[in-house]
Image 1 (tube, rainbow, N blue to C red):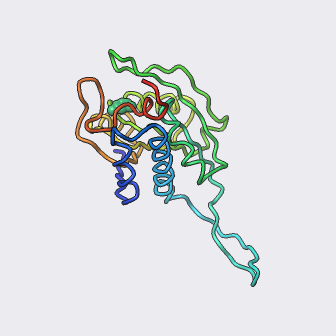
Image 2 (cartoon, rainbow, N blue to C red):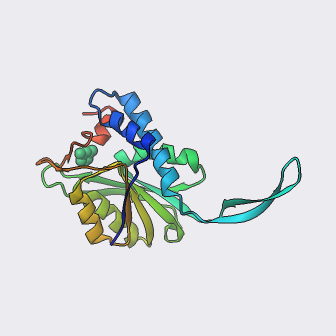
Length: 209
Ligand code: URA
């Protein structure tokens, strides 16, 4: 069974409060999601392995640590996942990015794949799959399915807010995938929105409605 990590860092929790607030406008919403993306990436990469290298400081040689040549990949689920991407790229600017495009049928809530473009060596990479809202879990499960069908085997799922229903679906379908969250909310409403959540993450990020 995949593990669930809810990041309780005060900066993440503080910023998440303003992300949730309906009076937060598009510009600030985007900036806050970007910042929380960075802060979550900081936590989620805690287990990256290090190796020793020697550099010369102005004073003499120093044996210091660098991240061992692990191949990583970021996979934003379009479109709302894009909002978390830049915050992570600021910390890891060389990481490769793949895209999975899914839309949710407004009546059935079923996800449909309309676009996928991945780094060629996807099977060698440790992936961080991103979607701000883990609601029914349908999109996340479908995205992870699509990645596994193309050879990916090692991934983490990173979301801002999840509903228990979505967490359960991912755990059931993909017990090998750990889930990283800023908050685990109460439930879904009848329209598939997370309660209390933050509304439609894509609309709030891109100023659409
Ligand atoms: N997608 C969103 O953007 N918000 C929700 O509450 C659920 C799914």
